[in-house]
Amino acid sequence: AHSARRFASVSGWGASLHLTPEQRDFQALASDFARGRLEPHAAGWDARGEFPVAALREAAGLGFGGVYTPEDLGGSGLSRADGAVIFEALAYGDVPFAAYLTIHNMVSGIINRHGSEAVRSRYLPRLASMELLAAYCLTEPGSGSDAAAMRTVATPADGGWLISGSKAFISGGGVADVYVVMARTATGDAGGGGGGAGGGGIELGLGVPPPPPAAVSAAAAAGGGESAKAGGGGGGKGGGGGISAFIVEKGSPGLSFGPPERKMGWRMQPTCAVSFDRVFVPSGQLLGRQGEGFKIAMAALDGGRVNIAACSVGGAARALDAAAAYAGERSQFGQAVASFQASQFKLADMATRLAASRLLVASAARALDAAAPEATTAAAMAKRFATDECFAVALDAQQLLGGYGYLCDFPLERIVRDLRVHSILEGTNEVMRLVISRQLQRA
Ligand code: FAD
Ligand code: 2MC
Image (cartoon, rainbow, N blue to C red):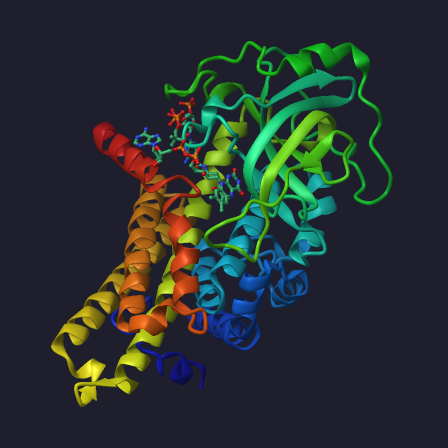
């Protein structure tokens, strides 16, 4: 019954992912939720700038809050290939809803892979249920594409670290409870710790962390004044080698948020600057080992990029279905718009671009699952191709609706606005080309 309903739309045609029966079940679950619970509200959430936390928790109740989190920690224990199917299906109902879920799951994935046992059991079950919401903090006002040039600094303090600096464009900022933050750390041995040092976390909502010792404040406030090795060979001033990843909890003294950014799309989720003024972080909140933060951040983005691409496929699938249905119903010059060969060819190209995008996303997801050597390149290719092509599909769909495509009563203008940013965030598509071409030069 599920597959009959799914293929009632044209957007599923043209390429088979050869899904397993279990994947078909997740797909149907996500698809039913998207059509029943997201699509009817997406326009309202967009118009009001409303972040629907209750609906996110409902999605978590279906297993979508902890897609990669092991089952014994409250998650679904699924693969990247499974995740891509789920996020595409959810994005069909609401692109930014699904996209926020991918970021939340990316953060859980980092904590699962790099947190100590204590940290994993403290956060992952509550992230899987979305009692806690997550944010990923890499970008800064002065460093976007050149992420390794970040200036936010974490300075050793008694029992932990003091973080100072500011992050920009943080999805979920201000609302999220758990922030994974990349910051520069001294390359010396002071204050190391490592993710294995359990305990010491700040209990969310249960009081404040211990005050930071004054002795380290001058160094922290100086910002960037550390001896990071110029690792990575990139254009960054400090390099990736001197960067570490931390969990920072909302409510930590010194943590503050800028006003919500006003945006072209993704309006249903908040985006804001996040500032750190000597924010104390206990040593157990370090993820992985000191100095591994840039690699942790990059590896997580490999998965994030595939998922953002999957969200583009879902949004474009919705746009194609809307355009195909409309062209069949709308009559001009005494015939259906769909009977003009120009429309038919446009729809044929849209369906082909969509199918190619879906296949590239699935292929990259499988490469990640297999930890294949080409996984980073495959993720960059999928992100570059699918986000650009699916945006083009959405624009073509809007065109097929004529003036109605421009009206807010129809979903096309919103889908166009929401998909536009996928070519910019999680690494611009120029950066994706940089990643791909570097691999070609190495090969
Ligand atoms: P810049 O890096 O300044 O780039 C400007 C232009 O130069 C771009 O066209 C770029 O492609 C091009 N360019 C730069 N370097 C090169 C090069 N070497 N070769 C060719 N062209 C180049 N970040 C987070 O950390 N967490 C988030 O949750 C998050 N959410 C976001 C949500 C939204 C809605 C938006 C808009 C952004 C978000 N970002 C987030 C930030 C996003 O990742 C960055 O905006 C993006 O990486 C680009 O950085 P930038 O804006 O500083 O652009
Ligand atoms: N996985 C694991 N390690 C990786 C990696 C990956 N995918 N990519 C790079 N590394 C390692 C790399 O091996 C190197 O290690 P070593 O020093 O041991 O050799 C180190 O990281 C530095 O790598 P590079 O030399 O490639 O670093 P460079 O400074 O040249 O930057 C670049 C690489 C441009 C690809 C990176 O800065 C980048 O991805 N920029 C875009 C930033 C971005 O995607 N931001 C998204 C923010 S999140 C967002 O937008 C959301 C909506 C959530």
